[in-house]
View (cartoon, rainbow, N blue to C red):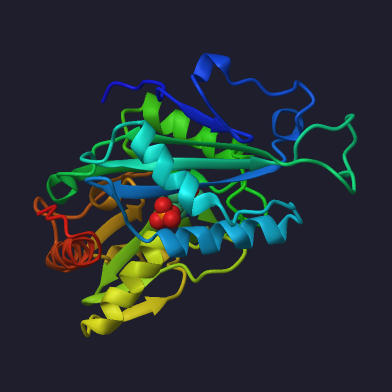
Length: 292
Ligand SMILES: Cc1ncc(COP(=O)(O)O)c(C=O)c1O
């Protein structure tokens, strides 16, 4: 898909053309990556899981003690879709809040004006049911607060760039012998018809799609266990899939290690397919949009 810039962005109270939107070189987001972000999907202009995303945004802000009033964000999000003329399209909202401008010190000042950036962009959210991808393993070199959706993403960026260079759809990370998640996706395994995913906590992002999938499993009598899978247990795994706001539910065909390739069949597994179907039904229920 061709990448492009949005036509309008919201920056600190103004809607501007991207080339007119400027921040200070002393913005702490620029100097330190001192900021958090959120990505919210919409189908035919209808937001999906908005409340959950805003809740996670509040959580991230609280965990890094970043003061920012987000009470008008819902209205701004709707305006972003409108201004981008995406009311009939699929896409996502990008929101970033940084700790604003201050003379450079590691500690943050008591008072500051947060920098708020927001925009809507078009993206393809159809056809995930047909994707069957290859991914590569990488060491999880991230910090110990992966539960915060921080814009400081250096470890994710380096690992995912290696994956991209190798022609892989994503990199799947391993910490202390256990699979954690992808650089920008949550990770699931199926073993003996039971779905496994790493528990929430400090080592993964509490993915909104992940949390929905867990609920869908529970509501539909699909066995789900929130437990990290050791790399040594991979032989028993029959299906692997990743989830995310724009990834939705993408099946994994091959997992590439430096010394071997683990293959998960020539067709997408039945548990993955069932969950994809349940996910599409949820999108239909919440937005009225049929993505099947
Ligand atoms: C590290 C990481 N894990 C998981 C996810 C998936 O989260 P969500 O379903 O909320 O998009 C993302 C999304 O960007 C991510 O960056």
